[in-house]
Length: 193
Image (cartoon, rainbow, N blue to C red; front, side):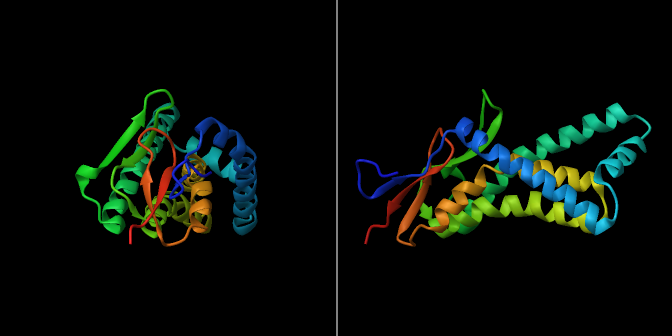
C-alpha cells in the first residue's frame, strides 16, 4: 500500500485482522502436524501427549511450568528478533526496543534506524526457525510429543511473521526497512543513492 510519499511503502497490518485471516491456516497447520506425526511415528499424537503429561507425578505443576516456559519462549522470540537485527542489520542496541503491548501481551521489536530488506527478512525468519520449526521437526523425528506440541504452539504464535516475510520476498534490494513504532509490520524506504 503506497503512502503520499512515493518512496515509502507501508507494510503494517492490524493484528486482529491478521489473526482472523490466519486462523484457517493455523487449523491446517495443526492438522498437518498431527497427520505427519502419526504417519512418521506410526502413533497417535494425542495419545502420546496424554501419556507424556500423565507420566509426571504432579500434572498441574508440570502444566504450569510448561506454560510458563512457552510464555518465556514467546518473549524470547522478540529478543531473538532484536539480536538478529543487531547481527545482520548492523544496528546498535540503543536503536532497538522490545515492546510488550499491554492489551494483547504481544511482544514486538521496534527500531528507528533503517536496515536492508534482506537483513530484516533474516531477523524475522530465524527466530521462527530456531524456536518453532526446528524443535517441531526434531520432536516429530524423535517422537517427543511435548516438544512437538511446544513447537506447534510456537509456530502458531509466531505465524504473524509469515505474511510479512512473503511480502518482503517481493521487495527489491533498493529498499530499506524500518519497524513501525507501535504497529505490527514495517515501512520500506528507497535507499538514497
